[in-house]
Image 1 (cartoon, one colour):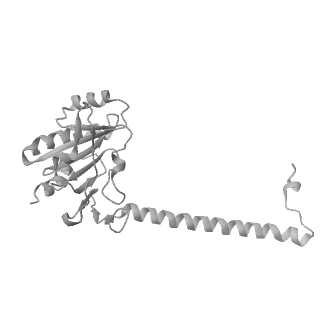
Image 2: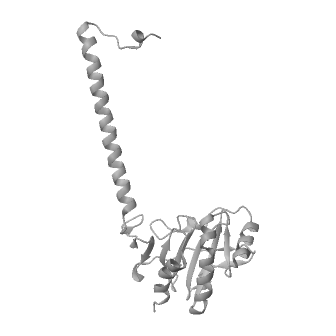
Image 3: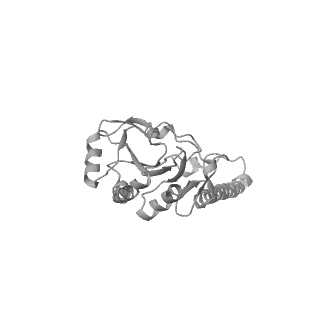
Length: 221
């Protein structure tokens, strides 16, 4: 196809000279509009990502995320953990509710997950150090297609606590929207002695950060 046949068809010379000018102006305005919209969207996204204040899916969420990525809820505003029961990777039956009266550290992990491997020694160390203080660690193993890799993981790192086997993530979906739910792998939640969710981290944890989110809940009366 020639350049002439692709060009807009005009009825007179005046139209042929003026239309390209209008087309360029229209395109320039369109580009400006798209750029402005994109800039506004980016600004909103950056504002959301940079927020270190109240977080969650609704105005009733009542949790605060600090600059360290740890989200916490005041004791009177906490929501109960959902039913977290099932079969462990060792084939035993476990119900997290049976630990009510203890502080529970719930860690979501997978044997395939590099950050999970990085934080495993820290979880093991704190679990051993706090067991005498009434702290119970529980894992939720997810997205492993069989229990064998999960068992090898626990043996390799000397994990002393049980893990529920949840290959399809059904247990994670039991957490209500707007609460401190596990939205990533790894995720770590602290459940207080009354069975309510007190803190959450959506990242691999150092020993220092884990103690920072756990110790205040252990100290509660």
